[in-house]
Image (tube, rainbow, N blue to C red; front, side):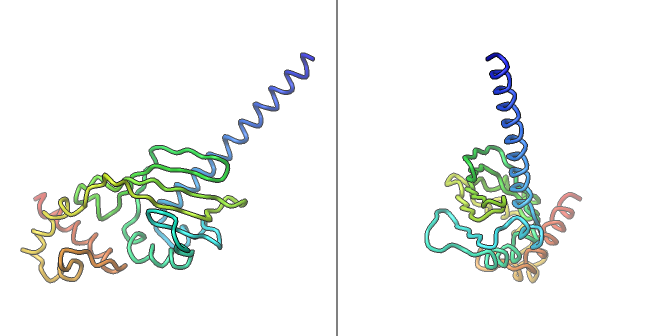
Length: 192
């Protein structure tokens, strides 16, 4: 009887250790997916039948191809820097609380966007569904961007017009890269 109890506890311990290691691997995959800045790296963690949703799961969502195209237009060239600060999981469903920054937010000292993302993995450990839910308490980036806009309007109005019109960002791959260049130039100039 004593040997059966010991064997049972050893098996239970092994099962818990294996489960813990697998979950750490899944968390690392999710974190790498969040912080990918190339199509190849992002796609590597997405299932073929991947769907993404914004704010809530309604309609058909965005498929893998559309999601990657959208990613390439803005997020990829800005190099996401997403920090996970809390997560829970139940089987294949992960609920992750995060803060998102990038090469656009950092030069203007914007603290980032907080969000919850619900990730569902398939049997192969690939992401088959992602629901991004922004925190309703998030501040607008515009007050942090305004000093740069004011300086650019005075010193580089044509360049500003190429990336920002009528108080709105023009979101393309080219303008994302140009924002990084302009904000870097602004930071370097005001630091002198």
